[in-house]
Length: 155
Image (cartoon, rainbow, N blue to C red):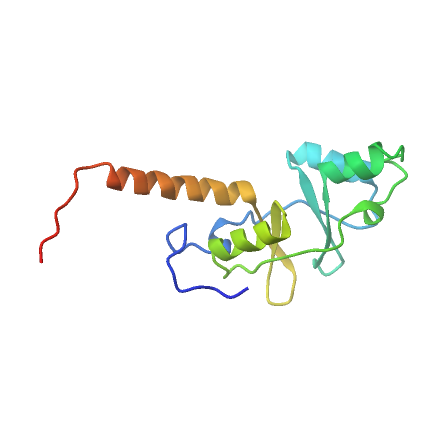
């Protein structure tokens, strides 16, 4: 996705400024039960599935576990992450703008965006909630700026 020259929400911030640099990752051969315990222990709603070189190859969410494992009567202890993870990974780069990330996430209907380096290795994670915090802050700043008396411009 191409960047625009227009000012973006976040005052020029990019994904590298916003990303969680310690995302929770699991290996594809781990069990869903182990992944779910990691999610619980870390207080997160998803884990990024990475290969041996830390490249993201899938994402497993709490919703995936409910729909693909629990609702189907599968045993979490006997189901490997790779059997139920979403394999279509859309990622961003630390240098991408927040607006580009928001548009990419909206177009793909995803809530989490793995951030990768130039070699495709996982370096962070940005969630839609992270983006919303920045957007709300920016909107609050705009609201405060226009709440005062109008300035009359003369030429």
